[in-house]
Every structure is written in structure tokens, then in C-alpha cells.
Image: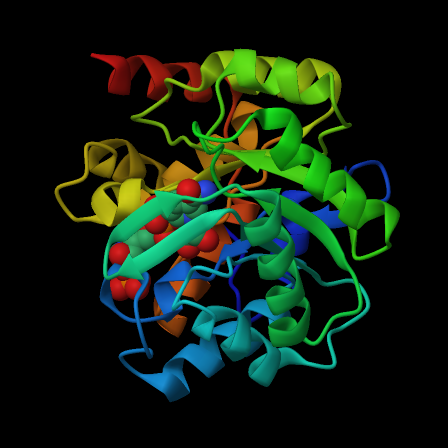
Length: 293
Ligand SMILES: NC(=O)c1ccc[n+]([C@@H]2O[C@H](COP(=O)([O-])OP(=O)(O)OC[C@H]3O[C@@H](n4cnc5c(N)ncnc54)[C@H](OP(=O)(O)O)[C@@H]3O)[C@@H](O)[C@H]2O)c1
């Protein structure tokens, strides 16, 4: 496995995917949610470390950073701006709207057009951007017709405030309904080697060339622990369980863009080194079968 210290932009080794056909990113990205306080709420546990994680991610070749207006709320986007603005030309900071976050660990979909538009304005300001290149609808609000939620985003696109639209937490059927209203550049669903209920959505993304961003790619840290079910296979391979989980995802599909989250530079470096781990098709199958038991 390649060392992060000898290959400064190691995330590049994960390959490139062009989101929406015109936003090329290295496939191994970074999810920023862990940088704010417990339950995605409030200030970071260690502000200096949070800044260092963001800057190190870019040094290591990360060109895709995932955030949301609701992480903090707002604090996550403000940290990204403080650490990285003016952004490198090749960096895509993607954010999400459509979720209320009234307290630590509390989430509520809110997809009224008025709310979505207000959140996009807030994200533009917080991130210091004139346009959000990939704006994701954080959750489909069951109380608001999908055509109204996506209609608001289409209007924002027509006004030049956003470029591509992505979805998160969707079923295959919801993806189909959304695509009848607007092109969809990305889908973000919970997915990792031990939780693959979104396989049907992934298949559709693959056949349509839609980026698939698995959230919780290391099962919120469960797959990284010493007692991870991946630990024996990882040891056989000479990698850590977190690296094996991420390498498995990268090998699982060419449209897969994992966004592992961490609040620590050491974990970030470990995770990014997964970009250089090679697995054969047999090994990918074996890991899938092993974890399906
Ligand atoms: N669309 C949605 O609804 C949604 C929902 C949840 C998350 N997300 C996005 O997806 C991203 C990833 O998901 P996630 O952060 O929930 O889960 P994750 O990436 O699967 O795991 C993050 C957890 O794993 C730990 N960790 C990371 N690397 C490690 C390593 N090498 N060794 C040991 N522990 C490690 C982190 O702790 P440390 O901080 O101590 O490293 C953290 O507790 C988020 O950051 C967010 O951007 C989206």
C-alpha cells in the first residue's frame, strides 16, 4: 500500500468521476459532518484539529467535500470556508438543504420551496460561493409534493445559484420520479460493506451514470474498530479495517464516491491511503459474501 507521506495527493489514486458530466472529482472524497460537535451540533470538539483535517484533506488530493446547511447548523459550512476559501479550482464543495436540525441528533425534513430557497441563500453566503455546483436535497419531505421541492431547486438552477441537483436517502422509485422532473447528478444513500440495502439504487445509478455517494461508508466507525468484522480479512491484506471497507466500496462500482468522515488528521490519513489498495474481483466478492452471513 502506498504511504500518504510519499504520495502527497494520494486520493488521486482512487480515480476520477465527472459528476453531472462536467464536475470531475477524485472518487475518494471527504464527509465533513464529524467536524462539528456531538450529534452534528455546535462547535467542534477541537477547532484547530477540524481546520487541520480540512486542509490536510485537500493536500491529500481530496477534491470532493460533502457538507450540509444543517450540520452545526451552519457551523460546518463556515469551518470549510474559513479553512479553504478561496477554494482550489478543482475542489467541489457540495452541500445539502431540506433538513431542519433543531437539536443534537434531531432531524426533520422540511422541503417547502420557501425553506429550500432560504437555505440555499444561507449556504451560498456561509460557503462564500456565487454558485453551488452540486446541491443535494437532504431528504424528500413527505408532506410536500416532490414536484414542488424539486421545482424550487430547478428555479434556483435557472437563476444560476446552483448547477447540478443531487438527492439523498432515496428509493429507486423516488429516483425515478425525480428524474421525470429534472436531471439528477448524484444520489447519497447509507451504504457500506455490511449495509447494502441500497444495492438496487446503486445499480440504477451505475446504469445511468449518476454519482453514488455512500454515507456512513465505514458504518459510523463500526467497521474501523479493532473488533470490526473486517479485521481478519484486513490483517490478511496488510491494511486496516477502515481501509478495507473504503477499498471495497471503490472497487464495488465505478460510480461510487465514498465520503468517509472523521474529526482527526490521523484517521483522515489512514482513510485516504485506501485509495491505493488493490482488490481482485474475487476478493470483492469474498468480502461481500463474508459480511452477508
Ligand atoms: N445524507 C445524509 O443523510 C447523511 C447522513 C449521515 C452522514 N452523511 C455524510 O456522510 C459522511 C460520512 O458519514 P459518517 O461520518 O456519519 O460515517 P462514517 O464516515 O462511516 O464514520 C465516521 C465515524 O468513524 C470514525 N472514524 C473515521 N475514520 C476512522 C478510522 N480510520 N479509524 C477509526 N475510526 C474512524 C469517526 O470518528 P473520528 O472522528 O474519531 O475519526 C466517526 O465517528 C458524513 O461526514 C456526512 O458528510 C450524510
